[in-house]
Each structure stands twice: as C-alpha cells, then as structure tokens.
Image: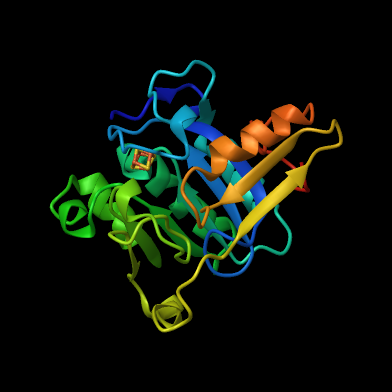
Length: 228
Ligand code: SF4
C-alpha cells in the first residue's frame, strides 16, 4: 500500500486508538489499530479494520506523534490492526518521530505475515522491523485458537527482536486477559486477545440484550492524552 502524502504530511489510516492498555504487550501501552489488511483470516476478531478504503481514517502522522508523546505513564506503543506492515512507511516515520520526542518507549507490532516473509519484504517493511522490540507474527487460525499471551492461535509467535523484552519468551504463556472500558456516554469497548474463540460475537449478543452497543475504544486520538 502506498502511503498517502498531503499538505499535512504523511497520513496513516487508523481504525482506532487507545491511550492505555495492559493486555497487548508488556506494561502499559498505547495502541494504534491501523485500518486495512490484505489477509482474510477466518474468525478475525477485528473485521471492521480490514477494508483499506475506509473514508475518514487517514490521520496525519504528526498528530499521532503529538498524542503519543503527551500520554502519561506509558511504557510503549503497540501497533495492531489491520495489518501494520501494509503501512510500513508511515509507521516507520511515526516511530522515528516518537523516538525523537520521547526516547525510551518500547515498540511492538502485530503482523499477519510470518517474520521470515517480512524479512524478504520491501525496504519500508524491513525498516519497520528494525524499529521493533517485539513482533507477534502469523495469520490467525481459528482451528488452532488457544489460551495464549497476546495472541489468538498457536501458530502465532512472539519474537523478541531486541534484548529489551527477551524475558517474555520464558514467562507464563497464557492469556493476558481483556480490558473493558465504559465511556461517559455508557458505550462499552474492549481490547485484548480473547482466550476462547467466538468471544466477540457472544459479547455483542449479551451487550445488545442489555441495550449496550460495542464501539471502538477511541475513534480519534486525544491530543492531550487522558482516558476516553
Ligand atoms: S491478519 Fe489479523 S487483521 Fe488481518 S485478517 Fe488476519 S486476523 Fe484479521
């Protein structure tokens, strides 16, 4: 995918963001779910993030960096989706600009492509790989769904690309759980990797029965940080 450039600079197609998350990587992390994925894994838990041409999802990288740099108390940023490596140029720029503004944050990404394939990828994809501490790779395979840390199926692997989080490879490998958020308007959102298949459909069914609607955690970043 070619990254869009405008008068505001490079744009990243973003499905949603979350200021603080404790279930998608080590410590407290901001999360960006990018919009668009070329894969179609059966049972994908983020089906709304798959189309690339979703109007209104393009956000200036500079604006996202401002948001991340101003978030209090986070240890790192996790890039999920959608497929982060489909927007490698914009995400590489984002991580580079963030490192200048706020050095020391750890970096993690998900990809539906195996690490070996990414290492044979485009220069932009290789550049993004070089900027990551952790990668969770491989497509979701519903038949191999398991109770695993930060990932949904047993074919998916956690790769420590730098020594920074090498300890995660020897820590207990069970689900980190889910994070539920209730907005001031009563809306409910969640983040994390369900330990059981079919979780989202069942949650949506139960919420609908109670008059609630599941919605993205935060459709737009908060420039000044804080909880949505
Ligand atoms: S790679 Fe991830 S976002 Fe893409 S279809 Fe598979 S599970 Fe869904």
